[in-house]
Amino acid sequence: MNYQPQKIPDIKLITPTVFGDERGFFMETFRLNEFQQHCGDFNFVQDNHSKSKKGILRGLHYQLKRPQGKLVRVTQGRVFDVVVDMRAKQPTFGQWVGTELSAENKHQLWIPPGFAHGFYVLSDTAEFCYKCTDYYAPDDEHSVRWDDPTLAIDWPLDGEPVLSDKDTNAKMFQQAPAVA
Image 1 (cartoon, helix red, strand yellow):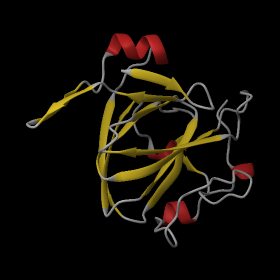
Image 2 (tube, helix red, strand yellow; image 1 turned 30 degrees about the vertical axis):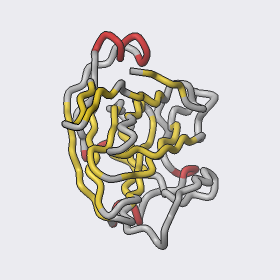
Image 3 (tube, one colour; image 1 turned 90 degrees about the vertical axis):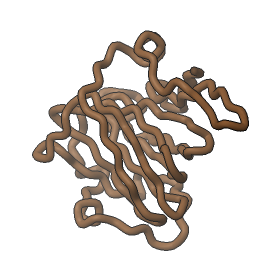
Image 4 (spheres, helix red, strand yellow; image 1 turned 30 degrees about the horizontal axis):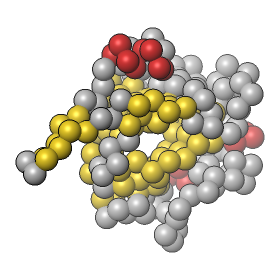
């Protein structure tokens, strides 16, 4: 696997080696020793899998007291995946990284603890899988507005995105609590 630091160097785009022929393909999606070498010593405690329709935007979500690192990938369809640095003491605080993840490109994204995360579905449907370094704690979850002008995220929208009530009522970046 190739681990490529993004414009926020703690974020890594991971490209697997894919072996394929007319029968299909095989690839490793996770190898602990390589992951630790390139991303750090993290333990994953929870795996999640979601399915969404075209135009749905989920996020930007993060946990404050129990921040989650996430290793994310798409197993069906395409999404535009976005992370925002919520770590107040880092020079990249408030910066964002966006990349397309798809079943076709098979890329993964490592998002360390302390980042808000979200994605926008580009295909008719998309299945999104991710490993987490801490358990989901609904009472600790916070959301930042996807369209906050301070962040100026360049979402590749096709019309108005479909949002949950939680995401519609998310806080602006300046009002959202930062991760210590």
